[in-house]
Image 1 (cartoon, rainbow, N blue to C red):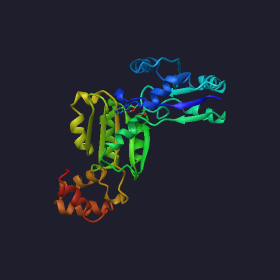
Image 2 (image 1 turned 45 degrees about the vertical axis):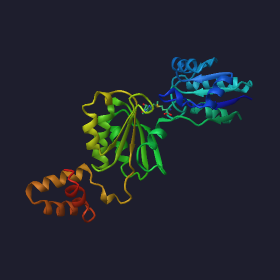
Image 3 (image 1 turned 180 degrees about the horizontal axis):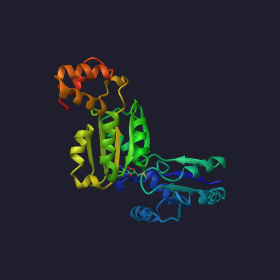
Image 4 (image 1 turned 90 degrees about the vertical axis):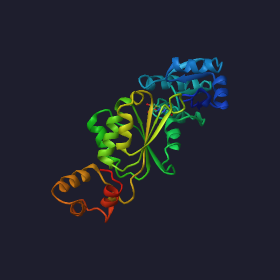
Length: 278
Ligand code: SAM
């Protein structure tokens, strides 16, 4: 029986590969990759010569049995993705599952992963976090998903396309509140690495008119909801406050909004008036 190695590769900076990964990629009998062209660039850079097999979301089911047979015949295989850690929003899960079914040993190597790298630099709590991968493509489903995460207390990690970034940040503002802290990490480990922190409003000011935020690879980290949700000032609460404010003084508007939205004492005053977020 051969071994199945899970080998992470860099998410930008080629120096982020480990010595062990290079050794394994050199000594295995085959390398399974999501993207042959991309992996060849990596192998050439490190003077690794090996046989490549393809595994992508389209052929994953069909190819898995074939690759399990190769392992059963005593060959060692390494699986890599286009970049980062295989299986994490990349192909390979079925292969690993079938490897266990066939008593094939799975050997994981630690290494680059955009989610964890961005989380470490987010300036947000990382003791407990949830990884949500990509949000659904359809707009309604996407908003539903963000709404469902509004009370999540753990730090939330999302992968996002630059084309949808502005829309997603707007949805976070609408559903999670205007004071929610967010970090957006673009092109980490690459030449144009850029990490920005702020509320949705502050981030929208940065990304709206910047062409660099319209391309590249992006990971979003969202601060978890405070345990006491009565402290969240959502855009719905702000809307109510603004309508009432038009008819009366700030103090009365705060009192009425507080009652309607069942907010804790002074939350509106502290967050809206003191911090001047209107
Ligand atoms: N398996 C990979 C990993 O371990 O990071 C993730 C694969 S997923 C298909 C690709 C997504 O990861 C990108 O669309 C982006 O959201 C995020 N990503 C990858 N590289 C990144 C980088 N250098 N900076 C920020 N986000 C990145």
